[in-house]
Image (cartoon, helix red, strand yellow):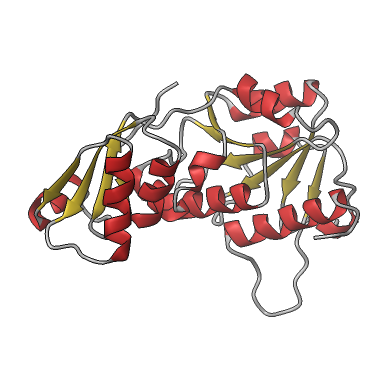
Length: 251
């Protein structure tokens, strides 16, 4: 399934795409006058894979990628291809009893979504699930923010997130929501099971319909005056605890 696309901006994102091979990338732009080892590396990788490199002026870059910190490098190709929910479920089934999916409940900020993708990929989540409506998609800004890590994380987009959680629950997954007001600390939950971690936006948290699908809610306990954490930071803490428990306490 194809999603909204756009140019892939920035050295790290373009490099990640090129290292995966020519699949999906049709051309690379480098800003005229751009010099240095990173630019030369991008040019070399592209030409090595038979991908044409074009040198364009600043105005052309700004027209095609307005407001994006592209670092003078853009890659072009097909729109981002979302995975199907069944495909994500199949990936999670490669480790029975240790399947790990993350469901993002209406994350509308592209920067937050990009950071979340990077966090999920870093901790080895098997997939990320997004709703189609009232949610950011995998855009150029998201790809820039996640620094190409979207290549390592299957991402599904569903019409109805609560219904998708029902489906996954029926497949044996525990639906666990992250909620700051929960009295159960993340460290007191047994994560050695197939899990979907549901996370909400920083402003509104989990929606009522998603909360109703959760088997339990957990929180990240703090000790300071700050009431809440950034979405990707809070998710990273929970995913780190999941990994710690699943590796017998070894990180």
